[in-house]
Image (cartoon, rainbow, N blue to C red; front, top):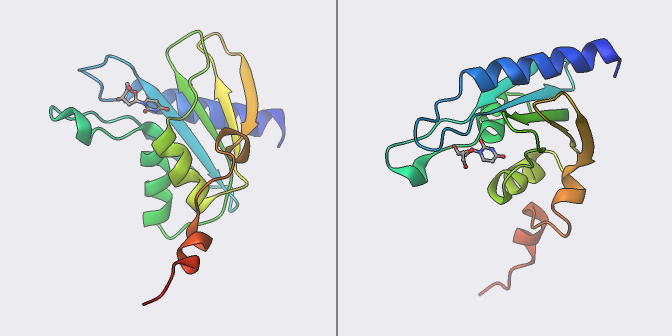
Length: 138
Ligand code: THU
């Protein structure tokens, strides 16, 4: 990926973060998921007054893509308005691993630093659809 493409992806994640609906935690997160088609799907966290119904930025981005019929992904940028990198939560790791076990994950700090990892690194020995075939029958 060229620097230009990466900066475009970063910009989409930052723009999405600005649209976060996080009146309860005040913790705004943005994500931008690049599909193999080149298309970018951005997402922000959306909180609910019934806190447990909150959805993270990463899953919003992924579900937007899936709902558009897109299933193949290259990388995702995740950014919060914090100096530290904001790694995806456990639930998002699982859902990202379900659809994109080889996904690259680029964490972006508020000062513009990046750290690159993968979903496989973030969720080793992941549960996946293959395991569903191994259940005992009867
Ligand atoms: N959040 C995300 O959107 N992504 C993450 O990777 C971590 C947490 C959101 C959920 C909630 O709205 C807020 O951040 C605080 O947990």
